[in-house]
Length: 108
Image (cartoon, rainbow, N blue to C red; front, side, top):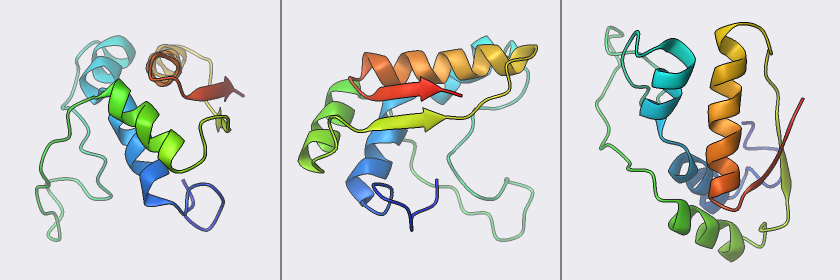
């Protein structure tokens, strides 16, 4: 997400997207639990600048409320994915969770 593009410059929108998706579900469905749950962090634990952030639990109701507060309840997000092999399962898991949180999303 590029924060210079609307609506992603709004912290509420970015928080809503994070709250909408359970990374453990994405790991399970997309990767068969091979690996560790993502932290929505730009660096991995092996990186010298890594700092562990507090875990954020999935909260679809709060995600929906934040999108409404940001005035973006009707905005349709574009989820660009590769639909081959495990990539499709990963994209499906993300899109389904976003929709479950009331967030509009189209796959491309």
